[in-house]
Amino acid sequence: MASASSQRSSRITAHASALLRRPKLWLLPTVISGLLALLLSLLYMGGILNPSSDLHRLPIAVVDADRGRPLPGQQQNLGAQVTQGITSARTAGNPVEWRVLTAGQASDELDSGKVYGALEIPADFTASVAALTTANAAARPVITVLTNPGVGSLGSSLASQITQNTAHQASLTIGGQLTASPATAQATGTTHLLLADPVAVTVQVGHPLGNHSGLGLSAFYYTLLLVLAGFLGGNIISNGVDTALGYADNEIGPWHTRRPTVPISRTQTLLLKMAMSAGITVLTTTLVMLATIAVLGMDASHLPLLWFYSYCASLAVGLGVQAINAAFGGIGQLVSMFVFIVLGLPSSGATIPLQAIPSFYRFLAVFEPMRQLSGGVRAILYFDARADAGLGRAWIMISIGSAAALLFGFAMTRYYDRRGLHRLTPQPA
Image (cartoon, rainbow, N blue to C red; front, side, top):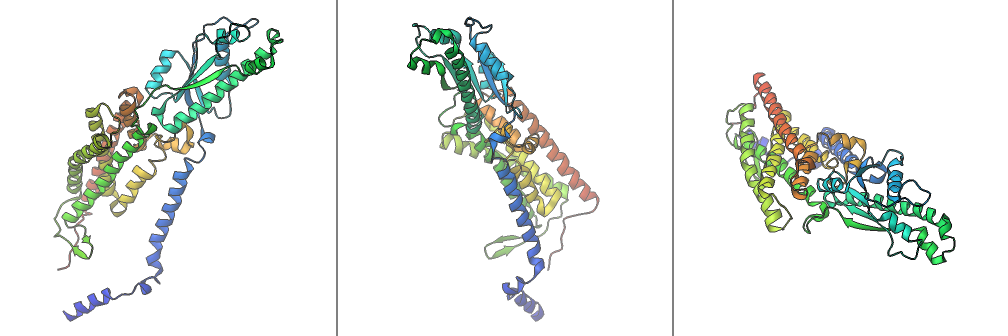
């Protein structure tokens, strides 16, 4: 008895200064902390530093409604010339994918988030330009730029800047034709200034959002809440079950306890954790919606669908966390953090468009959970829950992800159980 007491006293009186001189104590925390800091810096900052340079095929609509007759000596009216000039231009990397659409088609693609903006040429465009050279000019011709804040504030802003610059260049090109025309040779200096840049560019919202939509960012932050609820909830459930069954110590402040170990297989333990995830996610999903919509007033429609989608999305993350923890053990939380958080945030496409991030992140976006989930949330919140706005793909990926988590998790635990790799650990008397 005295010997045991002496050993405990020896352990308690160990000095930190002595332990700090042990290289092995430093090795693992130093390596892991350094790698995490390096990887997080490269992954997060690498995807956002230069979206304009990384821009690749950003979809923007062009609507040519011009019905005017061509100007003298020309075969096409000005609307057709502007459209042809825009779509025929090819720059390095094709930063913009110009889609020539009708007004109805453009409206539909704005309402489904398939285009980030639109450039509209009105029906009287050529006639208005021609009138500038006569005494019948009523007003400057107008080209309208339509924005789409539902695709995200940065994506909409990028498209708006590109479209406004394009419209301004078109105005200067038309101005060059007008000032070179013999019909304007006797025009005054003021008129020449007007003719040199004859087209006014107006900006309008093509698909408006509510005032409580975070300028198109509420979908991203709501998705982040769902992922965090599933991720944190899964880990809390996993740790809580392990503690309750006696496979982990419970330490709160200076108090330490350990329950008697309950003999249970890895497969049954995983089944218990996943069943608890399915039940507790009902509560967390409901609370997320109450906090964001009822308390904070976030704009949202299709509330029953939003709740069911939120539940399934958060549960899919929770099942994935349980499967990874069951397969990898103690480092499972770190692995699941990379899968659902570290790699998911920069490749989500919710803050910076996928067309404006490096190709590595576009590759991650094919399968990373946050990308799939944010598309569904965005469709429900902003685009009337349309399947072609991303909701259909989101449901498919949630189903695939949940099935993969179940198959992977139970395959690994069954394998461990068959090999006799049980979790039973002897406890001191």
